[in-house]
Amino acid sequence: MKRLLLATALLAAPMLAHASDAPKIDPARLAAHIKVLSSDDFEGRGPATAGETKTVAYVTQQMKAVGLEPGGDLQKDGTRAWTQDVPLAMFDIDGPVGAHVMVGGQHMMLSQGEQVAIRAAMTNIDKVSIEDAPIVFAGYGVKAPERNWDDFKGMDLKGKILVVLINDPDFETGSGDFGGKAMTYYGRWTYKYEEAARQGAAGLLIVHETAPASYGWATVKNSNTNTMFDIVRQEPAKSHPALEGWIQRDVAVNLFKAAGLDFETLKKQAQSRDFKPVELKGATFSAEYKVKHQTIVSKNIVGKITGAKRPDETVFFTGHWDHLGVGAPDAKGDRIYNGAVDNATGIAAMLEMARLAASGPKPARSMVFLAVTAEEKGLLGSEYYAANPLYPLAKTVGVLNTDALDPSAPARDFTISGNAKLTLLDDLIAKGKAVGRVYTPDPATEAGYFYRSDHFPFAKRGVPAISFGSGEDLVEGGVAAGKAHADAYRANAYHQPADEWNDSWRLDGMTADVALVYSVGADLANSPRWPAWGEGSEFKAVRDATAAQRK
Image: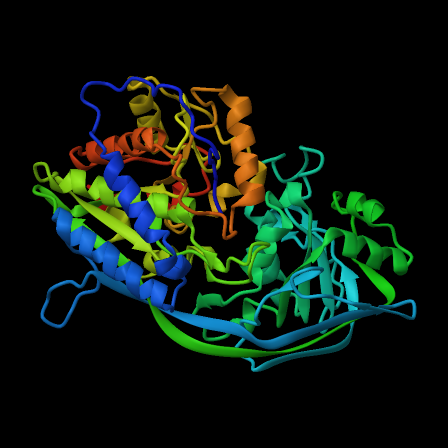
């Protein structure tokens, strides 16, 4: 998902000085938006719920109020709606999940949410019924021909349950064929499910370990045992095995031990391209549960300021409006996943930037404010938009995404998700320097944040795009304090009901963040420049192929 920095207590340090011409962001407006969007009344903003209806109405109302024009789907009368329809397939487990393994004559029950986190099947079937399927350890579950890497080695995996490790083979050592610590797409759980489907497996279980996953079991549980969504696919079984889920590390260790195998030894072997898949002899997996599935239409929300000189060229400000909705209760019995930081902060930032943009002279280029749905379900709203753009991607100047900003902790620095090289980052660095802030490269590229926010569907199609991250070098307490706050958030609030509004937040750190992001976008909207990817970027060739459309 994304970089998440949150101070849990009020920081009394003074904020860094702003340049006199810095955009004037209103912290009271930011606070008001966050409070409303993360209130219990919005029920965690789950897609296809009453929370979505309220969220779409609120964001649309606020866009109208600040003076944006509708920028969504074209209607029959030639005008645009405020939204873009996003058809999604929706899946729920209907009733209890029965899952167990047999190994060495021993029967091991697997408790849903505690030992495993099994997702609702996304293959349009009414019931998952797997009986005594062989279990195979498939390393990291990677097939990367360009790296001469194949964890499957031609084994027939049809009808089998694969157990794989999260992240890349380089994670433990920091060096190897996958670029060291920085995660590639092969390390993401989305890829591992897709590859399991291509291999014809009956299912895939990912072994959860906190460090390589970059989040704890509570996040896995809460994200995978509620309603699942996907884009509408003609042949979903080509992208999903019937069973997708995670398994607790200790459970996997015990399973391997019962099959006469040592988990750590196999994990070490999996870091080599010579690794071959290992069947757990005498071990079988069974599962049975019902699935409800239907197609729904969710909404991306789109506001716009039409450019005065080059209206067909667009600068995008993006963020996701959704969160996890209502789910399993926490220890206090709270079932509403309010999503105050993730991502009421990003939508509040977008609305405040929209207000600022609409209050001034018309920009030369158009400015589009896109609040997307179903980010928490796999970037589905932004993926749908990028696959079905309302404005040509070739003339989309750049994308500035705000996701999980820090609402309380002023920082001397800032970052972006991942380590991509592009001139859009150069612009951000220059603007930061002007207000006394420095750029810190993503300190956790092994977590794969680049692939976990809504800029990514644009980036992979060549559009220069970044997801801004609040800094970690706090004005009071420095990097040590920033890291402590970030760790506390991930452990105690990320994808949990505890991600709620906190009255100790004073928002001067977030105000500075929003001003910085807005200044970059406003400059681009009044400039003839086209940001570009750096040499060696995997997205450069895609962008360069459309260069003629930008002359």
